[in-house]
Length: 187
Figure 1 (cartoon, rainbow, N blue to C red):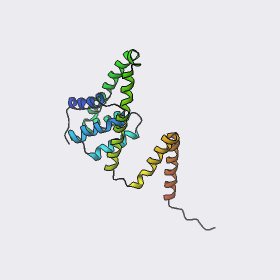
Figure 2: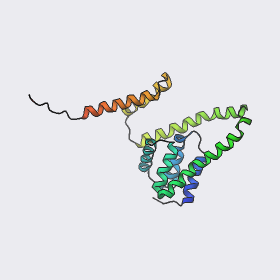
Figure 3: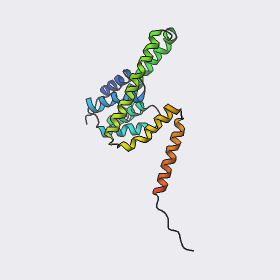
Figure 4: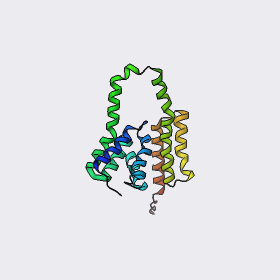
């Protein structure tokens, strides 16, 4: 594993933040390409661990992953530089848009551009899911729960909160079922 300079680390995460549309999950393929494939700062296993840690913490996944990667690569300095690189482009772009949005929001070309970005953003979210599931050695029977969640949320408009609560209930029942039963004493 190579240790990058702080300037290089900032530049990589700034580029990721600047050229990614669609939020944190859409940034995952770019982050992976930059820190795993191109610069070889960490391996796939470390990257998947970083995604898991990022999803476990509150906040945007891309920012959490930049925290993980920055700290992993260069401690607190790396963390600070990676996070600044990730959020600064969005902050600057949103600032410019906020100042001038009312002037051009109703233009048909702007509306069509945002509408046209939807399929690309969807693909940017689906691709890392497929890549991560391949590298996680999941079997086909592991996919029923996410597929059921997609159908329930997208097709039947079930709130994700109910699905999370249901999954927690299933995990608790599974945990209880695996607990050894205490022998009953004779009276």
